[in-house]
Length: 131
Image 1 (cartoon, helix red, strand yellow):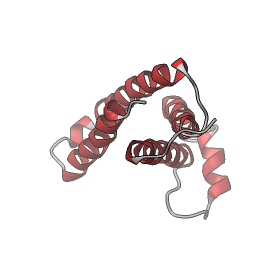
Image 2 (cartoon, rainbow, N blue to C red; image 1 turned 30 degrees about the horizontal axis):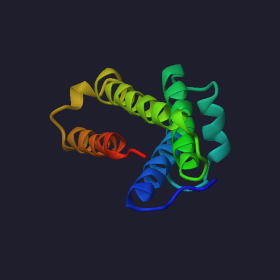
Image 3 (cartoon, rainbow, N blue to C red; image 1 turned 120 degrees about the horizontal axis):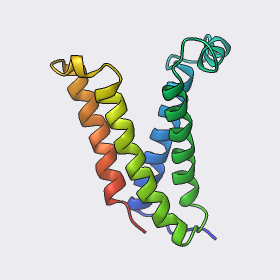
Image 4 (cartoon, one colour; image 1 turned 180 degrees about the vertical axis):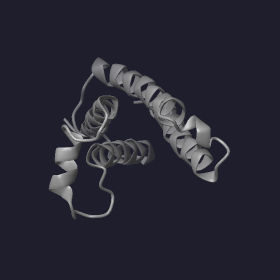
């Protein structure tokens, strides 16, 4: 059973894609094409990648995929639970990424503030999208 596609549906798809791709790039460490992909995968599963980063990346991939799937498959009451879970996960991800992952020392840099705004936009979209 498919759902009607409107602007809100497009936001759900784009947010899901953003999370899915962000999780993949966090897991592989590769945002510059496919060069070195196998090396990055091996690094992610046992090399210099931190366990917390790997867990967050996998959860982000799953959350993004579930958001995308929710636009094409009727999930019933699970849909609203999924949205709340993804919203809470995104807050946890923001705390890890912006504060606990040694980025708090960069709070006075433009990059930190740009990342905060970027992540906050996704958080607001997650708050706004409802079925």
